[in-house]
Structures are given as C-alpha cells and as structure tokens.
Image (cartoon, rainbow, N blue to C red; front, side, top):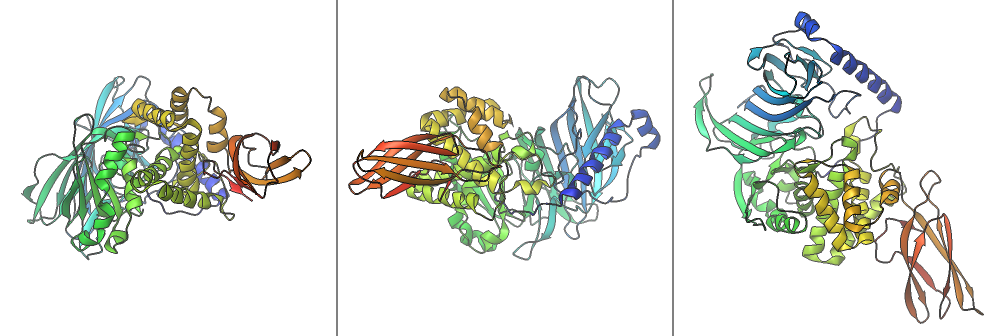
Length: 572
C-alpha cells in the first residue's frame, strides 16, 4: 500500500495493554467447552464496544490447530443509513491437538445466530473474539462455522458519500480490520479462498476479489424495495486483509489485456466515479504494461484479472488481491499517481500471492512493492529516472530528524506504525543493495526462486535469504543481520593524505554513525579525482576506520563515496 505514518504510542501504556491483552487471551482460550455451554449465548443483539483497530496480536492469540480454508461472505448493503445485514460461513480445518475452543476475530456488530456444522451453538464474546466450542471428534476434519450478524461497522467497512456526493461502500482491512465487518481468523499467515454475495442498491456496481460468478440479478428486499445481487469468487488463497468489496456508481473501462508465457491473458480495468474518468486516465495509461513487465521478471500474473478502483481507503493505495483500491480524492483532483499504481500492482506478487506470515515482516510486502515500482520506471523511462527515485528514498532514510529502527521491528504495538520509512524505503534499498552485490542475473533468479517456492502461501525473511543464497552461492547471513535486523545505516567520512615522494595517497574511510548502530561491512567504490582525471577504486569496509594506500599519478582533489549509488549510506 501507499502509506500514511502514525505516531508511536506511549511505551508504558503499550506495555500495560500488552499485559492486559495477554491475560484476556489466556483466560479466554482456557475456557472449556462445558463452561461455555453454561455461560454462552445463542445470540447477542447488542453492538458491543469495538476493540481498537490495528492492535498487535497478543501472546498465544492464534494457537496452532485451526486453518481457515474458505469464506462465504454474504452482505446486504443499505440504500440509506449504515446498518448492514451479514452472514459469513467459514470452512476450517482442525488439526490433531487443536484447542477445544475456536477464537474468531469479530468486533462491534451484534451476532444474531451461530451454527457449527448446521447445529445452533452457544458462544462467548471476549476481547474482540467469538469463542466457539469445537465439536468432539473434530480433530483431523473440517468444520463449518456460520455466523449471522447485523449493525453499523465501526471500522473496516466505510459507508458514506463519495467525492461525487453519492453513497458508496468500501472495505479497507489493513492490517487486521476485516474483523469489523466479517468474522475471521484475521492475521496474515492464515490464507483462504473466498466468495462474496453482495446485495446492493440497483444503480450500484459491485467489485470484489477474483472474478464475477455469473451476472448480477434483480431481487426484491424484505422492505419492498429492489436491489441487485452480485456474486464474486477468488480461487486463490489470500489473507483476510486482502478480502474486500466496493460498491458505488462506477464507470468500468478496459485499459489493456496483457498475455503471459503460460498462454493466459487477463483483463486490466479501471472502476472510477463518473466525474473522475478523464482526470484519472493518465495514472493508468501504463497499467497493463506494468502487469506485463512484472510477469516477465517475476512470474506470470498470479490471478485471473486486475481492477484499479477509486475508493474510500485511508491509504494512498491498498493492494487488495485483484482489486486495488486508491484514494478517491487523488484521482478526483487529477493527480498523476502512476508510481503508486506500479507499487500496488507489484503487490499482487509480493504481499498478496506471497505474504509475510507476521506483521513485523511487512517489508517483504512494502519494501518489495517500493523497489519493483522503481524497477518499472527504470524499464519504462530509463536509468536516470530510476536513480532519482532511489535518491529520494535514500534522503528519506538518512534524514537527521528520523529515529532509525530495524526493518523487522517486533516492538510495535500499534501495527499502523509499521508503515514507515524503514519498511518501505529502507526495505527497497536492501533489495537494491542485494541486486548490486549479486548482479542482475543471480538477483532476479533468487527473487524468482523465492516467489516460486511460496506463491499463494507465506514467505519469511529467512526464506528470501535462502533463495538468494541458493541462486548466488553466497553467504548472506551477515548482510541480512546488519541491514534488516539491526537499525541504521553507515555514515561515511572520507579524507586523504598525500606522500609526494612516493606518489601515494592514504585514503581514510570512517564510519561515524551512532555507536548503537552496527559497524557495517560492505564493498564500496571510491571515485578519486586528480588533476589528470578520475579513477575508481573498489574497497572492502569492515571496521569503523579503514585506511588504504593507493598509488596515484597526482594528489586526490576530491573523493566521492559510492558514485553509482549501490550502497545505502550518508557521506559527510
């Protein structure tokens, strides 16, 4: 996604909340089936106070043993007001040794009925969870949990007037806000297929993940009004943060039909509000070309179609699988957001098809999308345009007012705070440095290995490292440790002394970054200019102070560190 940054929470308050969440989760999951049958309820007509959006999972919140396989999501959207009627059925695999209680994420809406394998079942609500007893003998089998609900979503599903002054409804789930409008296992490691049956006012169009399942049909609603029923289905497993719907008065247009080496072609479309169609055209003029390029350097497009949708997302763009949502005002105002389009398109491979299993590894999504968007610009507009983008990223990373943290930062309690310069820009630069160190052939071979091994599943930083090591034959443990799991970057200071009698320059390169940051080890190129021209010298940096004696024809007049821009650094 294209981000907005959120401030850090007070550390003490975050610690207290973590302890509280852990206690609540531990208590909730310790409830036995018998105690739930005594204290549980068959329906909850109230709309309970929702939990905070974006809260990091507590310890043990997602125990092993449950795997959501498929979601059937049914919603009736209101023509007026904000109350939705919903029913979601989830097919869940239960493995041997699973707890006797299933905890589904669901908050803020009333539950009007719950069934397990078609049997009306009691449940408990606690800490934003529906706690559901698992039938005896379910180990090694599937269960189907169906929940009926209604109410006004507090988050995750936005119902409001759009920039044209017309009502519209859009889901906006990242990071874990699906729970505000449908019950789920709402964390990125659990991927499932999904189908959507959406009833909307008759003048709306509806878009969702995957492909339409038949044509929309007209129906009469219980209040006597008419509506249209839309069905969509996605056959590839995706995380809940990617499961979305959008309903509005759209103008749908094709922007291309790219084809791939596997013989498959897909439709690339835009779904725009009527007043924005012409203003937004420039942003999507190369949208099909982006799909073609990424399919060439990574793998064929992983889904059956791609829609670019004007929406109510809180982000600049949100990479929902097959249905990318963009900030409505940017497109309505005619801003050219082509780089955002490239970023979100790259997410279809990295983030959507290959997903980080835990939120702190979000750089595997955002860093990849940031770098591959720049790669498309290099491909389409040349090296100079690419270098300009990378330089803009570098300046954001090395800004003196910024507090550096590791890219993989497990200390964030508010998941929105993971959308920062480290996961986006520094993550992009990590990939750029790997490309520089391995060379294009081995780098892209490693990226393709990583993708191929984890398509429609999850991949970790360790998985990426292994794939790149297999492609290159290099040990990259030290690289990943210093650049991904530790904070900061090198700040280099170069100087020289000249021995005229020996015609020798002693070049000193110092690392002057804070002592709490690592001492970086990296190959480095120095460009030394003398009266007779410029020479390049490759060196290895391993210590805080390094000295190199070089035979030169004349005294160096200037030293430029990393003239080709392959190392993330701040020269002084």
